[in-house]
Amino acid sequence: MPLGSGFGRKATRITVERQELLDLRPEVPVLASGRCGSPVPARSVMSTTERPTVIFLHVGKTAGATMRRALRRQFGRNEVVEVKAPTVQPGRLRRDGAVAWFASLPEAERARARLIMGHMTYGLHEAVPRPSEYVTLLREPVALVRSQYGHVRRHEGHLLHREAQDHADLVSYIESGLSLEMDNSQTRAFAGDTTTPFGACTRAMLDRAKANLEGFTVAGLTERFDESIVAMIRAFDWKRVRYVVTNVDPTRSARAPLTDAELSTVREHNALDLELYAWASERFQRLVVDVPGFADDVESFRERNRRYRPIGRLATMPRKASAALLRSR
Image (cartoon, rainbow, N blue to C red):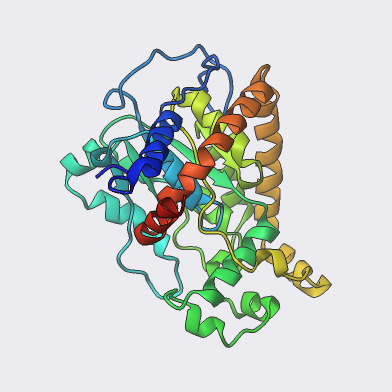
């Protein structure tokens, strides 16, 4: 049933406006991106069945939920595979089993995917029986660690929620060694590491993470979300990328600044991630943002996305809530 059906003339108008917004096309020249935005000749327009499979490597709490919604709009429902790891080893992250889970799927199911996304480590491409390309988002490590800790404390369904209640402050939680997310989580993910224990990350892992990220079509930044979206539009010639922010920490605006002890502990346990993020930020600026015409494309995208947001919010609301809003207009 179309959005707004049965709610009268006003709802019908909203449905029409929504369709108009969905049909907006970016009026920008296509600049295809070979590796993280480096200019190459624009690729010819292809259907999603002909293009390489896009793998979105989602590191938790990097605005990945918002990005996943945006990416879904470019693909048919049967073309999308969400990576899931049904089990987790003690002391490990659930994402550590994601590549093995995907590799266990029948080849036909792995081959049909044109968008694969989820919490995972680098290496899933080896189980994709067709050409594939990675995209991702990195986040400033101090903000990431704080967000991950808050997420575990808030969500009762998290594997570490109960244990986290025994650690009322961030320093205690980090030093407990309970969560590998507190210890260079991004370096681990992009290095494809699934075995290194807490506190044992090495510079060799950092070097491997950098080398792997150099092969990503877009390695964007949470703090530069719109620019990262536009980099993907340019790379893949996507036409209908729009988003509304989802899965945001409701306590973020009220949080007190970290203490000196907390900040020192976070930095000590995430020194490799801090170096990785600085490297990725400089690279994103140089290879993507500084490309001629990019700033104009970002402004154009932001205007279109601003027009989409009132309707996009309806799609993220529970059905009853959106119906009530439509009736009230």
